[in-house]
Image (cartoon, rainbow over all chains, first blue to last red; front, side, top):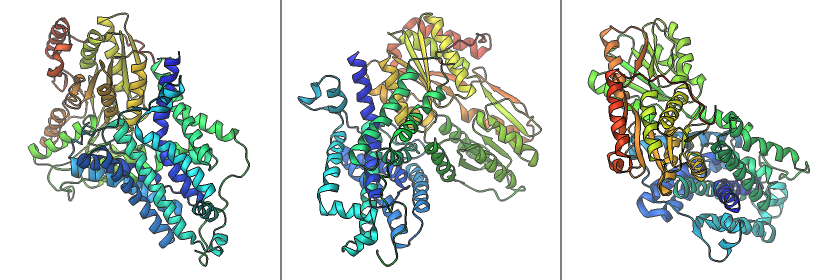
Length: 307
Length: 333
């Protein structure tokens, strides 16, 4: 029994890992007041970057190039939104579409119509001593690829950073009242730019996880909507680092439940199972308190005279 | 749900990736052929095979060719119209899902022949190819059941299209012909791109004891091969193209459609002006459908099974053995 449960929880954390990485990136961007719909583009760019990087320098290089590629996609959003002052939603969507198309085209140009096959080195699970032998939870949390442990550190680090440092305060102030932040000597546009780049790097790492810790190859469109799910996870997690972790886990578990239900062979239309993660997310959203938790300036343009 | 819709829209807008080799200039130009695929041609499966077929037409018949990747039904029709308006001689809609769009667009462009690879609709200039997935899938089922140690085998598909479903049903019939007590569990991913989902679904089946998986999920199927590579004693059966090279250490064989063969045969007829719209049935007799065993894994398959598969496949090629079985429940309806 504990074995089945352990399997399930381990797989849930595995599925949640790329979602949580991307969601942390989006969390920082939204804390600065920007909804980055280019996140999906960063993920697919990261996945492609991971393929190229790992082919040249192994798994480590793969993750580095993944983060840079995700960052590059977000940089386009940053330039268009902060410099050219275009609409954030449109700019993000455009970058996502561009990245999905461009990675497919580059993939064919570099690897031919045959693709890269399953040639990419992958990062296997690495059991941590001591903690991995905790019953049930030990295997779920501590028999994972190294990148998942970095993710735990990132979650805690973000929480501490955003509440205990001046820079963290500047980030949150920008998302709440950019004019006030400006009056306090902070440049909201600069904060938003860094937040976007950080978010893109995290999205890129999420794509890297898909290639380097899960599938072992790239396939066109393999981000498969994870960027949009990550954005929903930020909302579900009420814009807090720990809430985002919980929401990503919920979504990971719901996806795994879907796989398990289908593999049991129950005579239920499979579409119902496929809808399960989304239904659970909707229920969770409807169930959370309606207290405003969103940054007050989220999705609004900066004032021209207080950037 | 909202998320799903948002993804659908972005995909729709991003999808058309045109790779026109030599665009045709008009109705009076030489023989021109276009291909619409529902997914990326780098999937080493359904779409990759069709692209190979298109290139074969270009090389053998000197046609100017064009390919476009589509995603939504709205695009199917739009792209059919574009190629019709440009005066293309022959347009392939690669899949069962294209048949409604072909039927609607066909009458507007009588000079163009529209062919969907799947389906049963025909009209003055619309025809369909019907692949007998059942035949090699049945043979794959025989192999799967005799290799499986647990008596539980799995099927994983992209979406529940009729050809996918009937292939799985024939596979299950083959499995039960060898081992009447075997269980066949079937799962669908809901899309053809998410290789991560393919891997997770495969791992979930393996956790239930599945040790042979028949995959028909195109690009998403790459994740299924990866899952098998990482799990000892689990094998995969590929589909649509010869996928034995994707993961040679775990792939028992492939249910293969020789799409280039099928494409060039029909293109020849269209070029010669002898084409008659019909449902073109392609099976093992026409050698378009094939069961290709992976030579590297021959030792894993019992000799008795190999012998049985050989004689049955010869009989199917001769047309002396026709498959008729009641579709059996395979776990999921």
